[in-house]
Every structure is written in structure tokens, then in C-alpha cells.
Amino acid sequence: MSVLQRLLAVRKADAKLPAQVRIALVDSLYAPVASLIVGAASGGVVGIMVWLRADDLRMTLCSLAIFLAGIGRVLSSVAYHRRSLLQLELDDALFWERAYRVGAWSYAGLLGLQCLLAALLTDDPAVLLVVATVATGYAAGITGRNAGRPHIATGQLALAVLPLCAGLLLRGDTFHGGLAGVLFLFIFAMVDITLCIHDIVVQALVSTREKAELAELFKEQAKRFDVALTNMSHGLCMFDRANRLAVWNGRFLEITGLPSGGVASGATVHDLVRLSIQSGNHSGAIARRVVSRLARQLAAGQSGQTEADLADGRTISLSQRSMPQGGSVVIFEDITARKQAEHTLARMAHFDELTGLANRSAFGERMEDCLVEVRQRTARLAVHWVDLDRFKSVNDTLGHSVGDALLKAVAARLQKMVRETDVVARFGGDEFVILQSPIKRSDDAARLPGASWMCSPRHSTSRGMSSTSAPRWGSPSPRVTASTPTVS
Picture 1 (cartoon, rainbow, N blue to C red):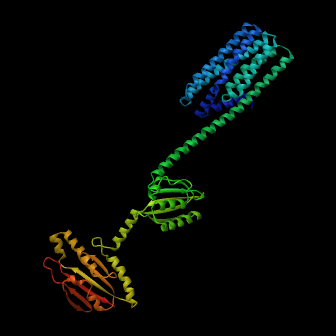
Picture 2 (spheres, rainbow, N blue to C red):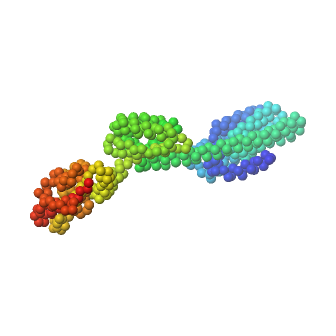
Picture 3 (cartoon, rainbow, N blue to C red):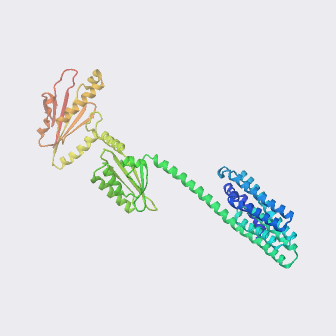
């Protein structure tokens, strides 16, 4: 591909670059203000030298124009830098690019014109050497300075060096003609270098932009991650491959009761448990059990769950999950309310809600256990059926609250009558059942410890069934009737 084709291809490619990259390329034109000041000063110095040496009005006027053009470029650069890069839009950048192109090409063209005049109007080799040196030095500097906009740099090279080549050729001798040929090749070499530097600059800018976008994305993700960690209802901590603490959230500190100043990155499980013991969360024995199990899971890369009871009565669940790349995540959850709910549900499943006595289910389970012993001829048992007569009258006349109070009172008295091995159950309504086990003789079923509250009951026996009834306490007081079969 020829140099011209490469220039055209670069021009088309630049038009497709992201806006921020194009703005950065324009900014590179104005970045080194010092070089513009040096260019203006050198133009003035060369003008004075040419005026003193050549004593030609045309060359003097050209030198003055070079100096003024340099001053104009410096003022333009100062005006540009008053605008912040963050406030610069693409349209503004294109305007400043056009402004720079006008100033750069004007300055380069005047340098080339000065070289042409020196080659044609004077035979003084010193003058020609000075202007040629300034022009070629300027052209070489353009290669790196304006590589971000290669079409501008190429124009500057052509305008500064081509007139010098033409002036040398017009001198008509072989020496100057050969020198013109060398300068012509110099132009192509500088354009090629400019295009190479341009590719490097664009790649660097694009890469920097992508990295900045990626960093911004990571920053946004980190913010979201931090918000998620902060607002989690569970505590979380993450351990690295060496099983050292890497990440944790505030809820972790709240659940475990650890001081925020005491937890640091790089802490081990043993460090955290030691800090927890110092905070008074649990005893050393419980801590050693929990930490040993968790440490084994972390070391083996296993997942599992364990629970820990704290000194303040709370229960914490620790769920550990290993990560494929190494390390693990431990989730801390305060399950105190759930444990209490489970305990309540378990109690409701086996105990009467009103009286706190065992219900039918619990009584049946206890009966099954006792019958196993009876079948093995290792124990005897007795079952007492207790019923409150006229209980409906109490509810109807005095209200359900009084009826409930009566049931509670009866339940409490029945509980005082029996032994720790016996079971008192409420089967529903005003019906109670007492499982007396073990007993030695059948006669033991006829009398219960503390049964004197039945007020000297009358006793009768029929078909192996022992029946006891208490006298009325006065209407509408209920009458307690008890029947007792014995099993041996």
C-alpha cells in the first residue's frame, strides 16, 4: 500500500473512532505549548539573521510573517487550554482542529517560502544553510509532535520541505539537485514514521479508554456488591485459598457480636473465634466444637452447615460453601426466631394449648412405649379417665373464660396428683386421661397420690374396671367422675 493510500485509509479510520479518542487526538496537537513558543522565537531569530545577512526586503517580510504566525499559534494554544478537556465536545474539538491546521500550514508554508526565496534570491550559502536547517528541523519535529493527526503533519512536511526542494532544483547544478532528491525522500520517510506513530498513539488511546471503561464498570459493580453486602439480612464472610478472611459485611459483625475494629483482613477462623470468646458470645467448649468442625470443612474444601448457641440465648446457623477456584463463603443467619417457632410447633403437636397437658398424640406415643414394657412382662400400667360433669353449664352461665380457668385449675391439680413417670393428658373438652406407669399392684390404680381433693370419693368395681366418683360440690359445680382399667 502506497503512502497516499495509507493516508486516505487512516483518514477514514479516524472518522470511525470513538468521540473521546478523537478529542484526545486533537488535544495532543495543543499539548506541548512550549514547542510553539520555541518555534515563534526561532522564527524571529532567523528573521533577524536573514535581514542582517541578506539585506533583502522580500526575505525580511517573509521572516516577519513567520514570527507573527508563530505568535498567532501560541495565542491559539493558550485560548484552547482555557477550555477544560472535560467540557470539550466533538464539534468543539473539530473546530479547534481546523484552527490548528490553518495555523500549522500557514507557518509551514511561510518556512517553505523563505527557503525558496533563499535558494533563488541569494548566493550566500550561510543564509541558505540557516533557513534550510530551520525548515528540515521543523519537519522532523512535526513527525512526532502531530502524529495524532497525520494529515496535518503531512501537509506541514510538504509545505515546509517541497519549496526547498524546488529552489534547490532551480539552481540547476548537480550538487543542489542531489540534495533536493535526498530531501524528497526525507519527506516520504517522515510521513511513514508519522503513520507508524499514529497507529501506536491510537492503539494506546483506545486501550486506555477500554481500560477506563472497564475500571468504571468494575467500580460500579463494586458499589453494587457493597450495597448488596450492606443490605443483606444474612451475615457473610469470604475466605481465600489460604482460609484467611478476605471479605465480610456489617451484618456478619451484628450477628456474631464482634467489634468492627477487631476484625481485619487476613484473619483466620481461629482468630475470629478467639475474638468471639473475648466478646462473651459463647464458652470455650462450644467455640472449640464449632471452630474445629468449620476448620475441617474449610481445609477439606467441603460444604456443610453447623449451629452455635450464643451466651445471650440466640442460635446462629453457619452455612459454608466452597468455591471452585479455592476459598469458601460462610453465611451467618440468626435462626433464634425459627428455632423458637419450631419449638412452639413441636409443643403444639404434643401438648394442649390451653392447659399445657399432653394431647392425644403425645399420650398415644407414651402408651405405645408402656405397652411394649407390659408385653415384655416388665411393668404394669393403669389408665384413669376423668370427666367433668355439668361443665357445659359453667360455660353457659359463667362464660368461656371461667370455663377455661376451671380446666386449667383441674389440669394443675391433676399434675400435682401424679408422679414424674405418669402422664396427664387432655383429650378434648372436659375429658382428661391419666396414664399411671409403672405400678406394682392393681390396687395401686385405685388410689393416686394427692387424690384427697376428690373429697372422699365413693368407689366401686365392675368387670375389672375401677370407678370412682366424687360428690357434688353444689350446683352448678361440676362433679368429677373417674374410671380406671388396669393392665398387667
